[in-house]
Amino acid sequence: MPNHVHTLVTAAVPLPKLTKSLKGITAKKANAILGRTGRPFWQEESFVHVVRDKKEFEKIWNYIEQNPVRAGLVREASEYWWSSASSATWASLADLALT
Image (tube, rainbow, N blue to C red; front, side):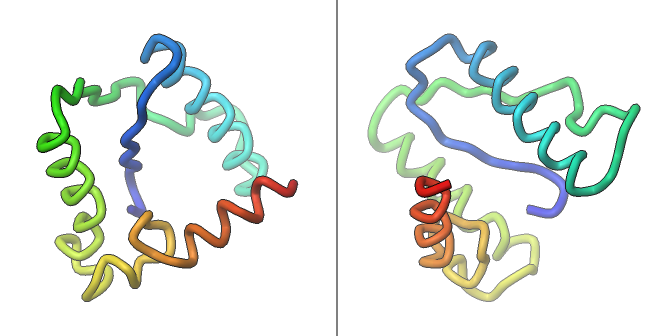
């Protein structure tokens, strides 16, 4: 999404630690790409929800993948390059493992 990110993870560390690490790493990279300094990249708040079962996991997964469709960015979730529904994303993830 242009103005926010959804992630669905099984955390092996406490969520605040995971969130801090993800925000720190991505903010540093994004600010370098954008040539920005002196301003926070991410907002302070995060919405964290603990998934209780497989049905809820699948519901949230579907919500995340359909978000670009609901926002009118694409007609089908698979058309959104940054989505897990897109084959382009899976290819880019494989590329990242090589860098």
